[in-house]
Amino acid sequence: MVAPAGEAVSMADRWPLSPEKVATAREGSVEPVHGLSPEIRSIEGCKTAGMLLESPDDLRTMYRQPRGGAVDKVVDRLDQHCLDFLAASPLLVLSTADGDGRCDGSPKGGEPGFARALDEHRVAWADSSGNNRLDSFENIVRNPNVAALFLVPGLDETFRINGTAELSTDPELCSQFELGGRPAKVVCVVTVREAYLHCAKALRRASIWEPATWPSDGDRPDAMCMLRDHARIDVETEALREGYSADVEATLWKPGGGNVEQVE
Image (spheres, rainbow, N blue to C red):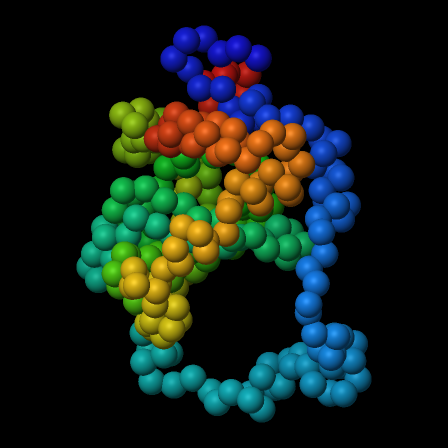
């Protein structure tokens, strides 16, 4: 397919991601990982030996009851502290589950404050252009319960919101959330059930904000090599990298959704 001048061609049009290739990858074409210890017990073996924690009572044999600030910090609305955190956050991870409990986690990003409060009980953000898998959104329309984890660069504490989500196409609401100078087509709105600060330990252990701990270019996983092999894309890695980068840049600030027949 040839796009009109100045318009981006999607990755699906650039590279042969046929249904047959996707199905083959899902059926186990990925190479197995070697070197895992054969001494690690199976789940059934752990069950037989009584080494699985399978109930709340089991858990409390290993962990004490939470108390103090860990419990008292939870609020049911967005106060000024919450608003300040949202205003500084350029990234969240949205967790959803379908009607059968199968879970998904998806990052959502934008300029700091891209997710903002509509009132003290609701936070919202514009859907931006993606790959149209709609993993999160298909889950939400089946099961509205969600969790969102907000991050601020340089800050080890994170902010958590648990609640219920809905997807709005209300023109008035969409006009309040612009992407690349265009109004959103879909806005995700989360009604807060509970909100609270999460402690710094996980990110501090990871040293995530310390550049000295980051892997060098040669030590980082090669995302394009991974994509090529998993999706069985029959092109050279560097050609894939070039096309992928061009596609990302062309669609980075476009709203998600709209006319399904329209090529942008």
